[in-house]
Image (cartoon, rainbow, N blue to C red; front, top):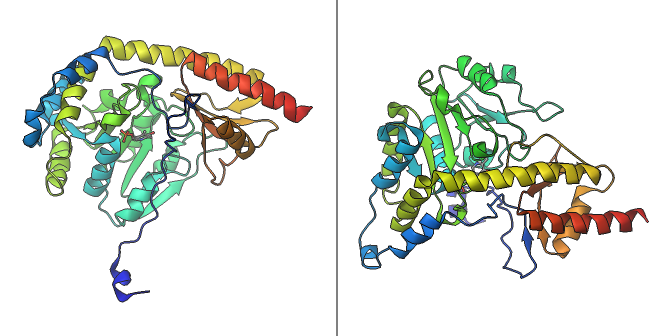
Length: 356
Ligand SMILES: *Cc1c(COP(=O)(O)O)cnc(C)c1O
């Protein structure tokens, strides 16, 4: 090993779900993307993008997008922080708010970026085991810590926490920042935004990647009290001022202004999810009740890894995590009804073949 390697910041990176080349028969249910296109207003806004403007830096404050989000959620623009996907917002929030020698707390089964950021930024952390039903017990979070983060609904379990439970966690943690990662909240959980008035240490993070069908444009945001947001901005401007490009800002504004379309595609996904739960049950799957745009399921006899590989061979992509406690589960994103039907047709053939 060369001497300079002693000074390298070594990290084990996050592994994102596979993005296979577009195969004509592909059914992609592995990264929780939205199966519907973004709002037609986004397409209109794209037509108006000026090539000449690309010479110029974007607005570092992304003011138009911040204002549109503030308007939609009825908060002040000074309570909104935007970033390049909520991954960027969360990473920035870890750096800004998790700056204690005490460990931050998050569930053992959760978004697998949290421990990666904590390691990367040298933040001590403690992973709190979910109970045997994959539920978060709020009492586990009433211990000394340097901050708290969890998704609601949780990923990859899909289980939602009630607002009462979130408030219990906030009540026992007035001295640290509590981040609620609401990447999937639109699909069936109650947002913690309504608690902002009472808890100045609460940061709510959301994204355009899932319910607004804009994963490719990388738009995320945080809403919190003005002091939290200004601390986030100080860190962001100490790092890179021009993170969000002009196109993302313009298309993000168009997306957030079309709330009717947003509700419409969310509703379709929720209906397909409820139907898919019944279809999976009929075929011998067990799962915690999902409030999200995915179902985290295990089969009563077929090992998840085997099923994952058989599906993949047929270009049906789902997510498999080779990790303790969850290595017999598949995370299946809710696609269109037609996509889900292809999955169920495959399962019928496969289950018949293995039990013959
Ligand atoms: C998808 C996801 C995110 C990040 O999504 P972005 O595309 O970066 O906005 C954050 N948290 C959870 C739990 C997610 O599943």
